[in-house]
Image (cartoon, rainbow, N blue to C red; front, side, top):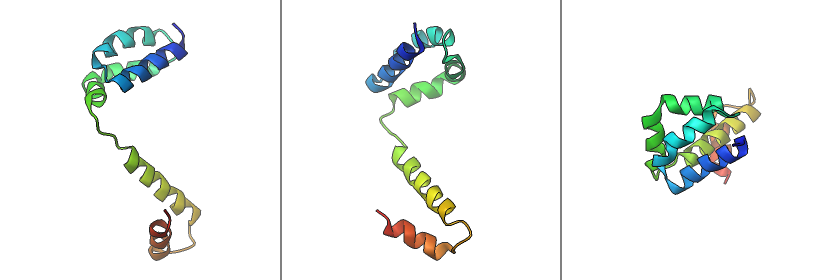
Length: 92
């Protein structure tokens, strides 16, 4: 099985919330190019199962943090917190 097929199966498992297919997925993944990723998932199976089961995502939060860090780096040394706050609140 190619790495592309293994990644596609992992994506499908996440989309369909098929936590029962995690263990059968790990074995072929450990023998492919994504072995380090599969080994890391195997070490924390309960957490991975919880992620697959959960309908919640922190994507919105991560996006806001990334945006804040980008603006902060752009303004490095140029202004204080008031200008940073104005750029973030004013930006949509």
